[in-house]
Each structure stands twice: as structure tokens, then as C-alpha cells.
Length: 341
Image 1 (cartoon, rainbow, N blue to C red):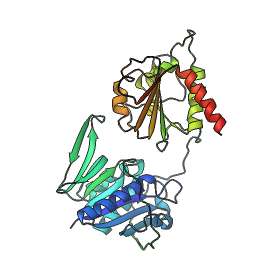
Image 2 (cartoon, rainbow, N blue to C red; image 1 turned 60 degrees about the vertical axis):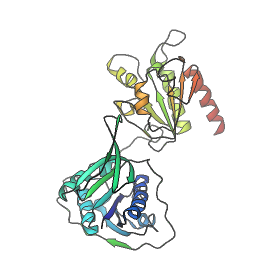
Image 3 (cartoon, helix red, strand yellow; image 1 turned 90 degrees about the vertical axis):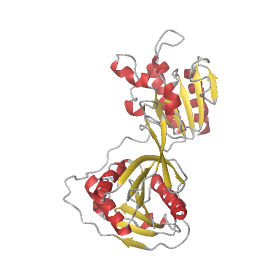
Image 4 (cartoon, rainbow, N blue to C red; image 1 turned 90 degrees about the horizontal axis):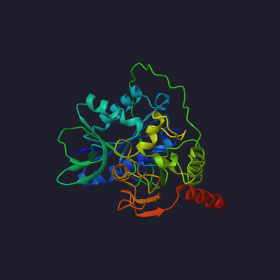
């Protein structure tokens, strides 16, 4: 009989499980039933009592690795914790959230246990056995994977299912002892930009994508990069939106052209960038087709602002197209959002 383990970890505040972890728990509950497998949930963090309450009612063993050594992400301590949890659960299938903390650890743990790890899993289905779906080649090729090798580790992409909701049931936890190796990395703390300066927000409902048109000459024959920065940042703050960029815009920094100072290659989406998942997306001053076909694959509602109604993106790729000047539209939207606050 299969034994399914869901690996989870607490958030950066050290209190609650991350949303991605709760999504993995939901997958574990669903497929443990489908497989007829024994379910266990492993929690890693400095303190795990509050996090354990978030998986109440899952009908599983709750295994905890706690201690100050596990407060921050670190390969040596996290790998040791995950290995200990897998051995304690005698897991043959392991689900884990595909975040920065576990993505770098799980392949190494799979190697230690003689198993196999598959990453970037976007869907799970039951055929004759468990089947995992993932994308290859920048989301151009979709593959369905089945494996006989055990333990089989699956890193589940965030945003692909609803998170688990706990019941009012009591939770019995089991503490798993971990033998730590010599720790050469000392985590001093975190340094992050203020929330209003952070432009990449995976949890945002709206993705705002800026194209190269923002830094080109406008109707008066002049470039208004400073005004573009003000308008875009104003929208991001007012709508709590995440910022994406076309490749042509982020590449301009190396071409001695006008640029948006807050834009980096981390904002790039599309064929050679990221493939974010948001409920809605608004494309502005973008004229390409391929970046949006690939990069917007998982955006549910797509809208665009463009002066060219015949561009490849506007014709058939967006649900709604506003044929208008993006400078004027975003200025008006910002004013309306300001009135609501």
C-alpha cells in the first residue's frame, strides 16, 4: 500500500503554514483517498503548534520538526528535516509546495532516499495510478508523468488548487527528532523592500504588464519615462497589483534607451520569462504576440490597452481590448481608485 506524505513549512513570520503548503495539503487529502494510501503531514518550522491546527480534520498523522534551527530556510537543516520526516512516515509518495524553500531541498532529499523528484507539477490525476502533469520548454509542451520508482517526490506549483480548510477537530502531533549536520550557514535575518516598493506580488489578483511603448515617443514627439513611472507605480499601489514586463522593455537598459528605473529582468514574463498565475491581467503598450501566448497561459481574464487594434496581441489573444492611450487611461483609473480610498 502507498504511503503519502505532504511536506509543509511555516511562513516567514514563523506562525502559519504558507498558502502553497495548504494547497499541497488539499492535494494530499484528495489523492490519499483516491490511492487508498495512508496520509501523513510533515511540518517544518521554529514552532509548529499553530501550524498544526491548520491541518485539523485531514485524517492524517501530523509529524513535526521544530526548533530554532528550522526558523529560516537553509539547505542543510531543511534537507535533514525533510529526510527525517520521510523516514518517519515511511513515505512512498511525497507532495511538497514548489516554493523557494523546498524546491532547492527536495531533489537532494530524493537522492538520499534513492527516489526520484519531479518539479513544477501543475495538475494531478488518477488513472490506473497517480499521474502528474507538468510543462516543458517554457510552457510549450505538456507532459503527463507516471513513475514506478519510490519514493516519488512531487513539487506542486502554487495557485493550481484551493488551499485546505481546517475543521474544528483536535490535532495530535508527533515530534520527529533530527540529527543536524554541521551548520556552516548562519541566517542573520531578512532584508526586503517595503511593500509599496515591491513590484512582484505572486498573491495579487491583478497582473499589470508594461510594454516598451511606455518609453517611446508619444503624441507630442517626446518621451515621458518619468510620467510613465509615476503612473505605473501609482496603479500598482492603488490596486495592489503585481508588475510584469515584456522582454523588449527590460532589455532596453542595455541599449542606452529610456528605461523604467524599477523594472528588472525579474519582472519579465513570456517565452523567456515567468509564467505567473493571477485572476486578471492588464497588458499596456505591448505589441508582441508570442510573449503573451506563453506568459499569460494561466491568466484567467485578459485585457489590453493598445493604440493598434490590429496587433497580434489584440487580435484574438485578449478578452477585452481598449483602443486608447495608456497614459490617459491609467491616469484616469488611478484617479478613480484614489476616490475610493
